[in-house]
Length: 506
Image 1 (cartoon, rainbow, N blue to C red):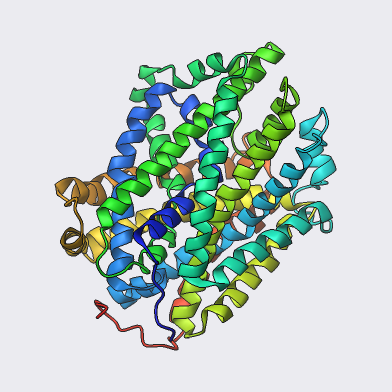
Image 2: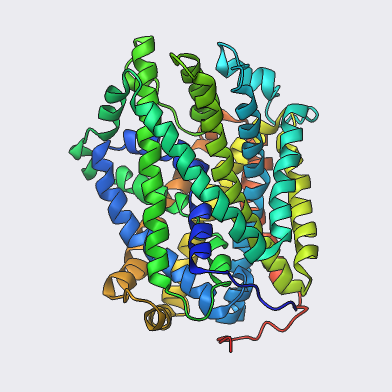
């Protein structure tokens, strides 16, 4: 087996971790979540969720990777060989996410080019679904769309080229360039956005607190959900990245820097997004709540419509906005792909180049599904099921295994405290042993209840109204398949010596 790579510096690791955490969801998910769950008051449960779930889990995963010096499967194997399958489940979830995440980055590249002459026209919704994606009905592939395929190939060439160069010369250098560039670009976007006419009304809508919302349990679930889905925790990334840390590394400090940097970018995104939403609302004479939208619709339908209304330099704003999506998407995609590259290297004792070629090659081929005319429906459904029943479920299983089954919290706390400036106390143990399992357990119960209710209720129907055959052949199989395939890979004999039990690098 090749000697394990290491980061060249602490800054390189922190920038890579921030690059993984700061992704597309920060820009298009957080603003809508905050607005719809109490506005300014949402920051109270959000901050509590950050301190009782986000950062504690981040510290735990940094400690796991650093202590056991392996990819997620190898780390779980070294904790206890019976839980190796959880590591592979996490890797499979990352693999699935990478296959469609790459396509969204490809869309962003296309739209950065469209911004040059605002070629999406006046009807931005029709352009996105019709002219650009040539969208077909659910379950229909309908052939590849060249406008998506070409930038998708570019995305994979960039990502795999960076990963081929390794941790220090590839991932670290890429993040040292992309993260500062993303920060500068997005600051320019925000500065321009807040100077628009109507921006103040948008910001008032974003920050105006509705303290009555704090008493609503769904708001707290939304806060924990946002923290969970935006910080790259619980699906192998942070375990993998921290396994490349030198022996003497400050774990807790790094976790706090990463967590608060991610949240700071989300706040910045909220300011930028709601400034332009306020501008659009004023231009069209509509209330804010009729303009607000999250997800893909915000980025590729609402924002182009807003850019059309700009009094000047709309084209430049569009290029910068979609460039920020490309940069945020690439840094996250690199980290997601690295999880299964590292897993393949460890399990099958192959070189990094072979792991990148095989793992990345297979992911690239699978991603072609989302570059077809029916790709949007596949992407929407797979994203929902793998996130809700993959990432969230993984987080619940992870903390239960570590805290209650293997009882490793004390060992991890001791390990982190030996090398960190900020010492962990009872808040960290209570958060992971009690608060996080309760919140995630409730989230999973409620998600299952909602989806099963919809499945058997002819009036409400499935997620987004998709037909039964589509949900049952695409949604559930992907979520369940990641677990099954993960268990099967765990049963394969290791080609290298996983060194069961605690591993201490000398």
